Image 1 (cartoon, rainbow, N blue to C red):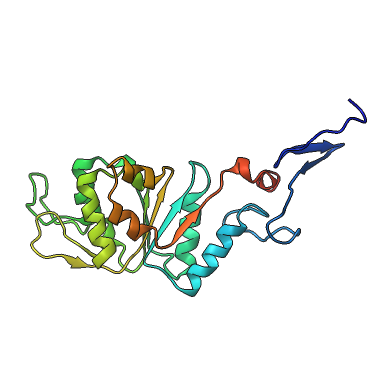
Image 2 (cartoon, rainbow, N blue to C red):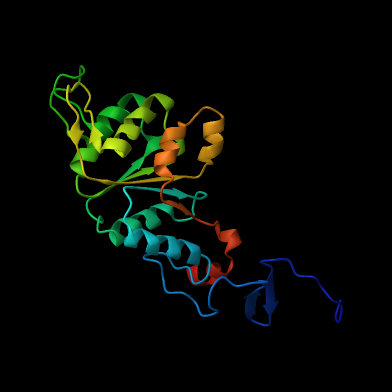
Length: 221
């Protein structure tokens, strides 16, 4: 009713004529919009991510974990991280959930000729083929338990063991993993290794869903 007070909830959107306003009790940072974050347009909602990225450039990590719901721009942030630390190219995105467990090891770590029935020729695998660059493991929470020690070896020693090989191969890659799940909950359920999470979580980046940064909707549109 006109003249009646209305309590606003955090993040409420108000329309005043042709103007839309987002109500906030407190603003994180200055009132002026922030510049784009690499390819991401986010004037207000990704300031915490920007600070985390700035810290990464001062002390480049070996492994990065990006957490956030589907659609929050995790791969775009991964590419921005790679560029910020001088590892933009070559860049290899690997959809963990989209690679069958039976061929994952061969595709990612390579194989020697004759390692299995169809292995007529040796393959370097994705990791070795992108030596000096970045490998991005998307949806790392879906990685089957038997394969997790293989990733742990890569994170700990920067080496891979191709299928059928007797000796590991040293590689120099930035490893970025992303997940839309709670890896801590996956660890508690026995579906994810605690030591693997510890290695990944040295440099975590958390992406807020768009519903929690409604100010950015207008810039995106």
